[in-house]
Length: 185
Image 1 (cartoon, rainbow, N blue to C red):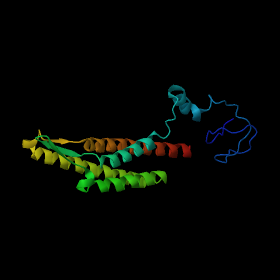
Image 2 (cartoon, rainbow, N blue to C red):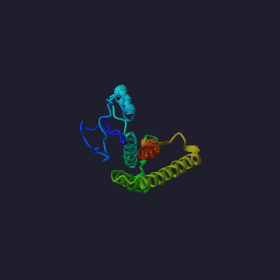
Image 3 (cartoon, rainbow, N blue to C red):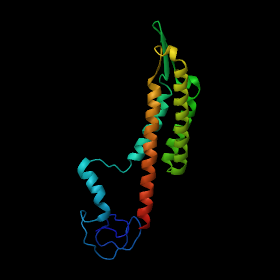
Image 4 (cartoon, rainbow, N blue to C red):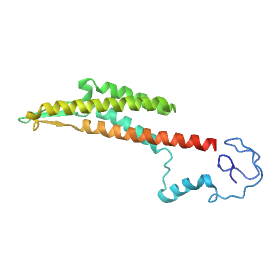
């Protein structure tokens, strides 16, 4: 038997839903496959065997951790006559901004403060766009040395982290909006 309001499974003979507290008026006669609120999760679990409910959070955490990792990897490298010099974001000073923003993102995700999460992710992505654009401009000005200067793995992982965070923000927003719409129906 299922709650007519929230769709959660309720023990037979229960008077109230243990999740939302709504009164249960007799047996609804619905089995697990007939419950309309359960159809999408049953399809997801039947097709993939994986719970996709919090993919947004996983992507956001992966993005924040990518930002932290990118700060310690070579961001730009120059090699001349067999001698190579690398620069990381931490050495340049900008890495601390990404580490602080990433740590704050991880904390607010844990605390479920989604508005703050959106703002921090937006701030971090804006900083990333500035950092990538600035680096590209410097490399374009040093075109004469283009064979000697190249972008390192930190550069690409920083971009990957931003892509993951943008996807996480969009999916989080859509999930929260969907939860809000289901709450009022």
